[in-house]
Every structure is written in C-alpha cells, then in structure tokens.
Length: 153
Image (tube, rainbow, N blue to C red; front, side, top):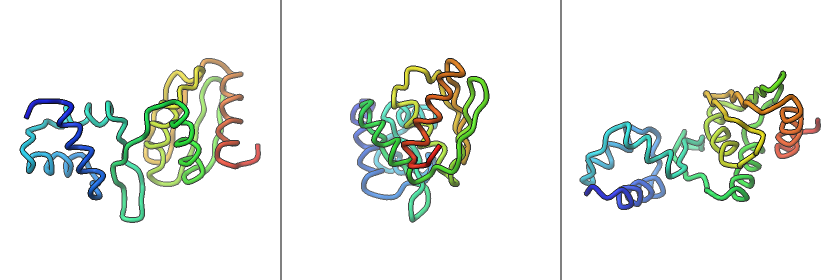
C-alpha cells in the first residue's frame, strides 16, 4: 500500500468519519488499516492535503482547509469570526492573538489566502506572527483582518 493518493484518501476517510485529535492517533488508525507510515510522512501528507487541527466541541480535531484562494478567504473569514481576539503590529510584523487553539488553523488559512504582501506566518497555540513586505502592507493587512473578523478599527 505505497500509493500516496490512496494513503491521502485513507487519511481523508478517517478524519471525516471520526474525531481524530492528534497525529499519533491518526498514525495508529492508519497502521490498523494496513498503512505503515512514519510521523514525518504523515506530517508532510497533512500539509500537502491542507489538513489542520481545529478546535471543536469535542476538543481539537483534524479538518481539511479548502485549497482555492477564494475558498481560503472564506475559510479565513469564518475562522477569524470564531477565533479572533486582537491584532497589533510594528514595522513589517503583525501579531494576531486568538482564542486557545485558534492560531494554527488561522495561520494555515492566512497562508492559503494568497495575500501577496504576506511573506509567511508562524502559528503557536493562540498567537500568530505574520511577516509582511512593508509597513504599508502591515497596515493594509491589519485593517483587512479586523474587517474580516467583524471588528471596528
């Protein structure tokens, strides 16, 4: 069972059929289905599939973040409405604070939204560092994030 497409299909089937809260739990479920997969391969698969841990009523679980830029922006708006706490910045850096567990899925959605002035993000548990190309880009993106979150500037 070495076909990557089939492995991705198996991962998708598992995370949509049940709550899977950790990579190790997902790895054990895959092994039980006959897939010998290392943690690094699984991590790479999840990144390629645009799968992220998101908070839910039963605790964190894996969910697929949609791939197209327009869909990513819709996902970003939904996630910002749910998890946004505050945003501030200096020079080319933005610090976005979220509710607990919201930073990783939001960072993924920001990366996937294809903002041309975003160089990259680093997401922790409840804080995201967003690196932009300029002060002006930071100001523009900060306003955009506040607007998507439904927060007045």
